[in-house]
Structures are given as C-alpha cells and as structure tokens.
Image 1 (cartoon, rainbow, N blue to C red):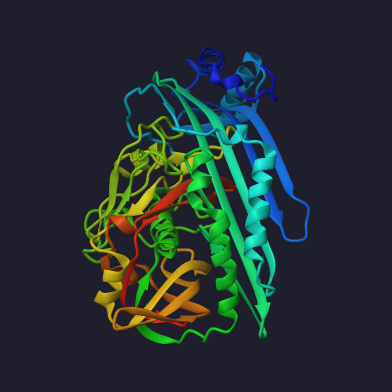
Image 2: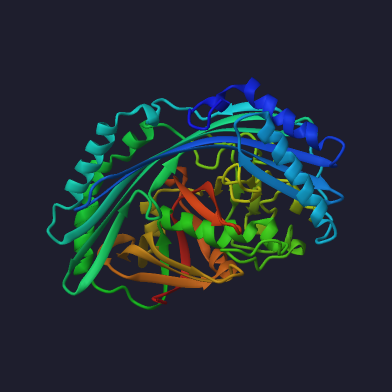
Length: 490
C-alpha cells in the first residue's frame, strides 16, 4: 500500500487490519474509541478568459483516531502506510486524552447500537475516466458562448470531481465502508459598461453546483447553451433600472431559497452551536434546547427536513463520520422547531435525539456537526401559479451577497436578478435587489411554497471549525412566496 495509488482503501481486508490495529491499542485504555480511515482524490479544472487552464489533482490517505478517557477526548491523525502508523496514531490520541483530563466537562455520548455496512454512490460515467481533452473542450465552448457580447470582459468556468473511500470502525463493534463520488461544474460571467459592473452565474451562484453522481450530471446542466443566456443577462443588467426600497411581496427563486435555508436554518439548527460548543465561522444560534418542540420558527407553510438517505444529493450517505446510520429527520414541522442536527457528544449531553450529522473534512479532522441534505418541503403548484397568487411584487433569484449575524438572527441578502411582477406576470428586469429580516419573522412571513415540479437541488461547500474544515452538503428548495418583505436594505 502506498500513499500515491488511488484505490488502496477499496480493499476491505486491508482497511480492517489498520482499524483493528488502532483499536487494539485503545482496548482497555479508553472507554470508547473510533477510527476513520480515509482515502480521497480530487480533480479540479478551471478556465478563465485570457488565462491558461488550471488543472489540479490531489490524493491523500490517512487515519484519524479518537479516544475517550475518563470522559475526555483525545485525537491524533497521520498519513498511513501500514499498521504501525495506525498504532502510533492511537497511542498519540491516548496521550492527548490523558493530558487533557480535567480541562473540560465530561463527555457523555448518546447511546448507539453497533452498525455495519457498505454504501456506494450510484455512478453512470466515472468523471476520473473522462479524457482531459473532453473537459477542456467543454470549458472552452462555455467561455466562448458566455463572452459573445463585447461587454462580458471576465468569465470563468470549471468542473470538479471528488472520490473517497471512508472506513469507520469503533470499539462498540461498528465496521463501515462507504465509497463516495461527487461531480460538479459552474460558470460566472461579469459584464462592464454604462458605469456599472454586473454578474450572472449558473447553475449555482455559490461555487457552481455539485451532485453525488458521475460525469452524467454534467450533461444534465446543458452548460454550453446556458452560457449564452448567462452572458446576455449580465449585459442586460448593466442598463436595468435599480431595484426599489421599502416593503413588498416577493417570490424568491429556488437557488436563493437554498442559501437562505443554509444560513438562517441549517447553521442555526446545529446542536453544537445551540449548546455554545462551536462558534467559529458562523457563530452560535439564537435557539436554545428548551425551544425544541414548541418554538415557532416559521409559518405553517415551512417544513424543513434533513434526509441524507436521498440518492444523488451532496451530503447523502448511509453512515455519518461517527458511524451513526443515516435517517430522515423533520427539523421544522409546519413552522414549529421539532429537532436539531446533532452528533453523539452534543445529543448525549443535552438529551436530544441523535440525527446523524457528524461530518469531517477528512482523516485529519475531528467530526463536527454539519448539515446533511437539508431541504424545504415543497408545497403545491408551479412558479407561474405562485406569481399569480402574489399579484404585484417581485421575483428574485441567484445569490449575489449575504450577511448574517453571529446568532443567525438578523440577515441581509442580495440577488443577481430581480423582475418586477404586475398582476402575476413577470415584467422588467431590475438590478441590485436586496432584502433583509429577522430569521423567525422572515420564515413566519412565508405564505406558500411551490410544488415538487419546481424543486431544485444545490450542493454546497461549508466551512466550520478551527482549524477550518469543509463540509459538503446540499439543500433543495422550490420558489416560495414571502409577504411584506423589507427590501432595498443594502
């Protein structure tokens, strides 16, 4: 086994030797131990107007060992070649735990039965097997189409893929092997003219879009044709009227709703933030444990669910990084806070249900509570029917900017596009639309959500922790109608 050959950890027998080696060191010395053995490989190709293509391929393989001694965590991680590295990591984790005893409140893990199994992302076309010339030709066509208008002076496009073998074992008897594969792409175009700069993006304004799928997902995006629209819309925004300020009824498009879910619900519902254990990058939460089961978070139209069992979504899995089996959990039930995203430590200490949301960026990181596939349950009807229901107002979509305080309470967002709506019909294009609000008041103003036919899924990277680690998750949403929204705030 070398650290440079992809597929070394495809072998369950080889992984079992390493996991058992680490657990044998901890056996009798710790009340609990778990091991994450992870091999990952990433491929990224980015092209931008006037620059050479940038293609990178990175491979890592290593082990992370976590032990609990007298209620205190110890953790150690290292690249791995053989069983000696696994044993060394376990000894280092034990030493760290012993040195830390008495420095924090004792850890109480939520009970969990041993769970073993395998999981593999369903893939039709392996993106790592696609020839480099095919990837580059696609991006060349996308950039050429997006920059047809002379006013589009900057554009970039990219494709990415990531594959992982993740093995988890613990002292309670769990043994799991999951093989994940993600594929994604994105496009961004900037137009300059008339004393202004405007941008458009596709298919997600935040780092493109990524799915748990193979190269076949790229084909569904129709990137080359969409690039023509993206370039033309960026130019049209240059001369569009400025969006107004005041209060108005607004239909928010699916992409913008997905980021709204992420920032004002996903992070706010992470139990480690609610307990105050975690405050890096996104702060804590305005919620308390006592709110669960009774606090009104939104209107009856708002039901938000965590479900990592849905195939094809970034953030889907069979087991989280603590080995907890994936499960569907209703977080907001018709406007009432029903549950949180949780890991074993936070759930055990607070007495809340274990929802299987412990995730780690890789073998070098401790699992923390990250969102999974968290989505807004669709309602009924098409986007056009939702606009007709609104009557007069605005339709907005595709995030351009965001800001939210460190308790997930006050927020403001800007969108790339807005359209004036009169008598239910979409009219003039407007630029520089923004809106703001207070989280429970905003969700409480949601009158209706469009139906399943309008549902779209967006994969996101998300930063958390110190040292920072990336979590990979997804949010699905359909357009929703919000009444009396405060607009023009930025």
